Length: 151
Image (cartoon, rainbow, N blue to C red):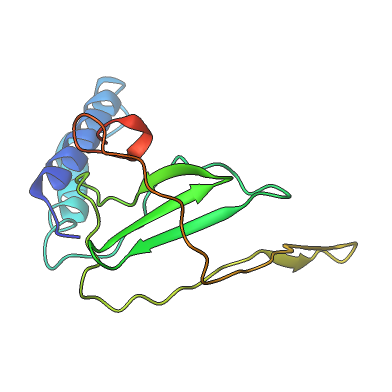
């Protein structure tokens, strides 16, 4: 993900709003607090890109839930299904479809498990591969599959 100066400016504006609120309450020294904020924020969103997670509005895992992971090597897209419902393609933080075309894709799963001392808690799952994915829905207005609109 490429860094964007807007993120730094937004973070600085949020910090300054907090500082101004605290100054109005006479709880902070204005110059010293702004200096500390600038020291922390000014170079935060600069430099090379970075990998970050995403917030996805996907349904929770529940007993019996069937999850599909749909990788299309022709267009380089990655999409998800849950219980036969198309959830959408994965997008970057700018809303553009993630493009994996020409990249090596390695499937990986993460499951929960722990022993609390009183009980063992864990995930039971069955993994099936090589299944044909259902047909993806047609693009909606605005060019997005994600919940019927652009994101």
